[in-house]
Structure formats: C-alpha cells, structure tokens
Image 1 (cartoon, rainbow, N blue to C red):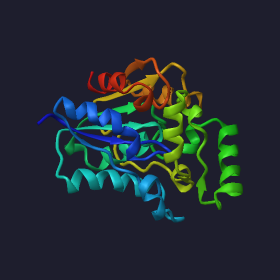
Image 2 (tube, helix red, strand yellow; image 1 turned 90 degrees about the horizontal axis):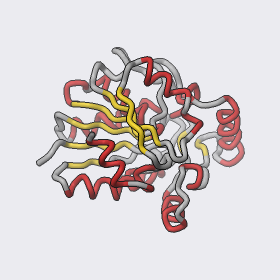
Image 3 (cartoon, rainbow, N blue to C red; image 1 turned 180 degrees about the vertical axis):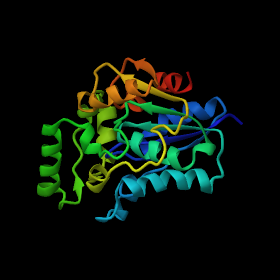
Length: 234
C-alpha cells in the first residue's frame, strides 16, 4: 500500500470534488481519504453559528487520529489550506509533507478574510446577510472556479453548498511556525489564475515553500485530475 493521502476540499465544496483525483491515486496504490468539512456537502445539515475554522481543523485531525494514519501526504485546496495548516500544527508527527493546491494562505493569527481583497470580503459578507441568514456565504457559479465545461460545471453546481461564515471570520490558531516545519509545496493554478487568493502567494514565498505551476483553473481536481495527481506527487 502506498502513502496515505488526505485530500481536504475548499470553500463551498465537499469530499465529492476529489472523486476523479482519488480514483487515480488509488490506481497507483495510495490509500485516500476525502473528508467533508462540517457544514458542507453531505454534512451541510450540521451548519450552526458555532461552525468555524476551529471546527474544520478538528475535522482534519479527527481523520488522521481515527484512521491511525502516519506518513501522510496532507493536501488542502483553496480555503482547505487553512484547516490543513491548523491540523499540521497539532499532529505534525503524523504528516510527511503538505501540498497546498491553489491554497488560500494567511499568516498565523490571521483570518481567511484577511487573505482576500477588501471588495471581495464586503461582497461575501453582504451575500451572507442577504441570502445566507448571516450564517453562510452562498456559493458562486462553477465558472468562478475555472470550470467551463458545461457537464463539469453542472456537476459542480449541483453539489456546491453555502460556506459557514465563521470559517472566514475566525483566526488561524497555531502555536508553532506556519507549516509546522514540514516540507510544504504550493501548486499555483495558472490558466486561468484565481486572483482572489493572490495575497497568499507572498506568504508562501516568505516561508520559502516550494512553488509548482499547474496550467489549469482553480478547481484543478475537476478540470485536470491527471495533472493534479502529478503535481501532488511530484
């Protein structure tokens, strides 16, 4: 059996989005886990005002502990980078390396909203008030994530669910250095790029993490699953 791989999805998504990537990883012998964060996907019914980033960090650590995983390749896509970085701080000894797939990255003590442009934050807060009961942010269309194939876009949009607002308002609490001193690689999805998360690229460079380019859209696991697998395993 190959290295265990834990794939953590981004905002509005769920474990479902990794279906193609997970199948390819299993074909080459990896044990793959695709947890869905609390309040999203098939766990959308668990959304409460208390569901935030700390909840989602616990979601990730619970998988590693319950499945008794070691030597893990821990992957976080987009917003999922933050639960991954939080989990690494708590369970460093279980993790071999981290890959952030077009991740939203902020420094310790900062919020997901701090990694987004001010106008994007204002719009998401407004949408949450108007259409999300001030509890969750309604999902954008699949095209916002670089998914343009009609069949793929329809599949993604059927599954997107509102993102818990507290997950973007709550600071990333870590006690050690960001990345927990583990090998970290950042995969930049460049065609088209996702400008909302561009501020985090400087954080990646400041920490000296490896940089990899993947010429596809933000939802790379949907638009280029084979290329995504290559980038994750590089």
